[in-house]
Image (cartoon, rainbow, N blue to C red; front, side):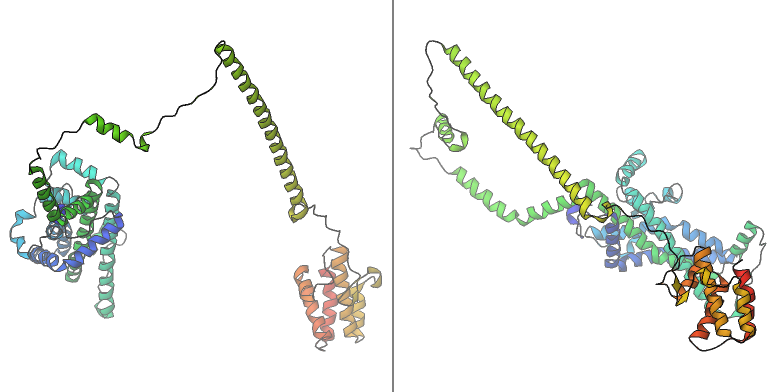
Length: 475
């Protein structure tokens, strides 16, 4: 396999995007892949089904179909690997098993339960590594990629189960009720139920399972092979190599012409009057450029007698100026901190004034029962000592509205003066019923509203019953 001959666009992809590339590869070369897959799968599985039918053990045929999956995988991988690298094989290559059966025994035995089988398949079949070399190669390639291959296997198994169960459900829907299979076996024994299910496996189950494997296996292999290609691209820089080779091929003709011109120039004879240049002179000319720096001459007055004293005086002057600068810097630093503190204090003062949550919340005023509610006086001194007896007497006299009014006033007075129910003048009668949460009060309010607003005066017996229940409600 040479990366320069690859027939797909190589670039760095995420593992999920690489799997999608595998599906695209299968859609492009699906005819050859499924044709080769069918040439191996159909005769082999047909023979297995016939043998299982003769032995009356069709469940064994399903097991063999599942166990031989590594063989189908190698056929599909052979097609895709050759097609990706620019050589689409014909389906007749299946007549030469040596091309795709490398490591088949190991795959059917020790590696059969490898959850990353689709990813590791190419290491043995395409690279041909064995033993410790193969294990080391699998570890290097599987780093940061094996987990995605394992998830691919889990998703593929679930797709397989969904298709099998969907086909079984559709078959059961199409069958008449009389043709449904009888359920048997020992329901209390797990193995009895399992053996019963295996014994009831029919031709339809085996054929549906074989069809599902035939349809899904190429997608599984293509996604794993694309993961393998993406991992090698990341590790070995295949995309960079392919790009450089294509650039070289594109500019090969131009490079050949330039090389020929350079050779012709070098082969021309040197003129006799040419003089050899001095290297030092060339270096001096180059150093004259401004990029290589410059020299500067500085002149200053200095006493001849006491150079030490002069240096001492100059250093003392320097220390004096430095002391003044340090004092100014310290003063400015103090002023800066004072200004910052003042600014923070002002911000806190402004927040205390402007923000509501910083204001002191006044304590609520104590509840004061209202003098009247709904146009009725509630003061206890305005009511008779025994409200229930007075209301019953009014009802016997036929003064039903006055009796209901007295009961209503008495109930409101009981609630606000004795029970501490905080009713306000802004409450409605319905709100008063919900706040009081007393069934008797709700019945009393309904009777009063029917009498006062709808002009529907209740029966005398009903009013007397309300009077009798008054004492029990407000005992």
